Length: 223
Ligand SMILES: *Cc1c(COP(=O)(O)O)cnc(C)c1O
Image (tube, rainbow, N blue to C red; front, side, top):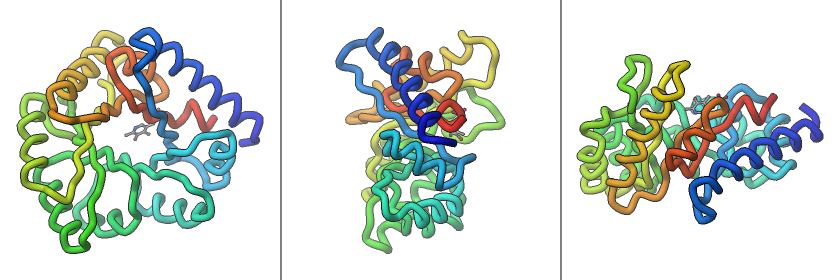
């Protein structure tokens, strides 16, 4: 990808975010995470130079490699993929800005234990499987608030900042919208939660309309 293309892609996404957020309120601020999982470090650098600072990876190994290759620039790294218990220590050592994919209480306990042993803290979001799909991870919407509160109470080394969802897998906009509304309702009921991460390249405008304040955009930025 060349610099000119990166600027066009970023400007296009920012313009769409701007229009979507203003429909909600001029005070509704949306953070953009560039999902770089299918991209090389060179392409990340190009998009960084166009002005983007936060990037997300979904595999620990890729996060490790790319953050090493790009250690000279102050990228803010997000982890958005499924976290396996045997990779927790690796993730902790990479000091991510935010982990979006805490998807069970069991995982939270394990993560908390390992953070405690290293005397560290980690910013996390609770992933919610709002459309109840077999193919997706996350806690069920009915129990999400209860689990959120339990993690807050029992996992002092996890800074739980809010919730994350992937929109329903559907061609029907109403079904996707419903999944975002479900997550946003939970978000509003989680005490002191500040981040509602939902929306990807194909549906971020809809997600913002439903209250998302952090979107994860890959293909629209890196094309
Ligand atoms: C890949 C991925 C994205 C970005 O998807 P695009 O459709 O490329 O924008 C967002 N969130 C998660 C969890 C992902 O795995």
